[in-house]
Amino acid sequence: MILILEPDTDATSETYQRLMAYLDELQGIDHRVHQVHGAEQVLTEVYLIGSTASLDEREMASLPAVERVIRISDAYRILGRHKDDHREASFSYNGVEFSQDNLHVFAGLCAVDNRQNVERMFQVLAEHGQTCARMGAYKPRTNPYSFQGHGADCLPWVFELAGKYGIRVVAMEITHDRQIDEIQQALEATGHPTGVMLQIGTRNTQNFELLKFAGRQSQFPVLLKRGFGITLEESLNAAEYLATEGNSSVVFCLRGMKTNMGDPHRNFVDFAHVPVVKRLTRMPVCIDPSHSVGSRAASPDGLMDMMHTTAQGVIAGANMVLVDFHPEPKRALVDGPQALTPDEMQYFLDDVRIAREAYERRRDLATAHLAGN
Ligand code: PEP
Ligand code: MN
Image 1 (tube, protein in one colour):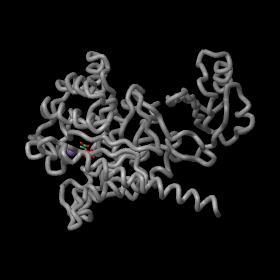
Image 2: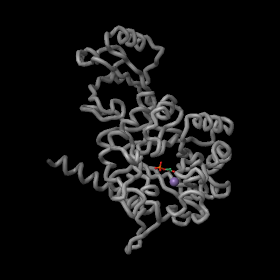
Image 3: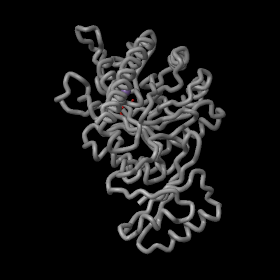
Image 4: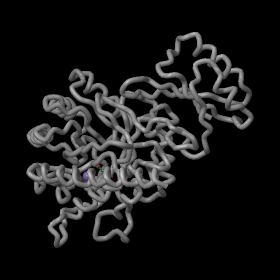
């Protein structure tokens, strides 16, 4: 059961204290408090865990500071959608709103290599009105002899450059909890010129200790990638780990599955699951066409498979696109063959816009159709 408190309820207020005193007395029921920071208000949700079947919904709704009550099913208690659950499917971070209704493009380097390329990327993004980017500093690599990323050393100048070009959110993968502190310190040292969305990659989807660490902090939202060899349910449960620890500012990313059935793509593209994730949970859904397709191969119509799959995800309602760009793909230290180039930025954004407009028209059509029935 979830108790949704009145907006902006103050934890020091007398009503809140009375509510907590009441909940403390309930036998066999634990409670956990979550705060959801929206663009305009802070919502407090109290999760009641244990033998809640005996609780009377109306009685609980009449408790001090409680606005309404939601009974939840077992799966994805915090991030899931439940019957009569009209909670917001959004959060805002550093002035950017993430929701199941809007769309952001996070283009940039798979791996930070040098200052010149990072600056060029941010500059191109700014020229195209973009405020989000991707930049990998810690790279999990299959081969131990491959470039592992510049790590903490590059963070100060990457953040400064992001700030210089008005980038508000940089998606950056972490592979160890220590790196959250390193990111925090680098942002602090540079005066918070930008913000970071912590990315947990497909190799770490079920790294439960890392998930718990990322869940225990609420400074940074988290982009969790689907595990490449586990079920969707298992990956969604991994997202729930972040939320149970306290961080429900989570975006879920589809990035393809590892199976030869997907050949010749790097992974079997799973963007048909965009609406499924939106139906099962309240998380905004990201697609990663670069790591799904893994090449710049094009079909006879002149469109790269990457552009086709991006459009497929966006027309199905995706809320974020994570995509590799590089000023000189041939010289990229990681994943050059799948990178788009700065002179393709306008083309890419225009193609995304066409697919998004088509999605919005399809959504309106469905709404009108349902209203007519
Ligand atoms: C990445 O986005 O740089 C990455 C390594 O992706 P994935 O975890 O999906 O392989
Ligand atoms: Mn990569």
